[in-house]
Length: 161
Image 1: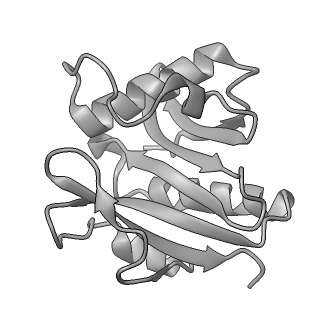
Image 2 (image 1 turned 180 degrees about the vertical axis):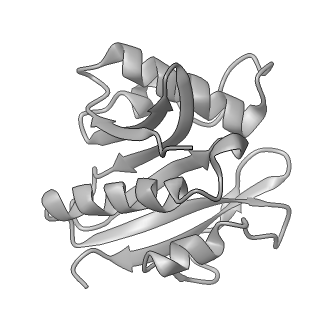
């Protein structure tokens, strides 16, 4: 299987792409039958300081990621999801690297990765991928509840290393 092509775009300029991103995010986080995303608003998704990354295979959204850079000193990589059928082919690493490269292009000095953690202490299987991309776990930093059985933990990486 070939790796799907990764597209980066400003959500204000491409409504169709932003809608695909939002739909894929909803499926990844809440399942296909959930009525609405409960942790991200349209205002957050369609901001000028946001870039969306979508990997598509035909009409299928294979992977997504979001870069938010409201704070020019510390941008955030969020909403990184790879569809189960597209895992273990290097797509996750390519998505994360695309966001890191874009952060470099924008001259952002630090990129923080926001992870969704299942339960109180279960880090995602992709943790090693994030570490290979240069992220370092910062225990106890900015952890807070996100929904019924998930927390967020932050990892960070300097974009100038």
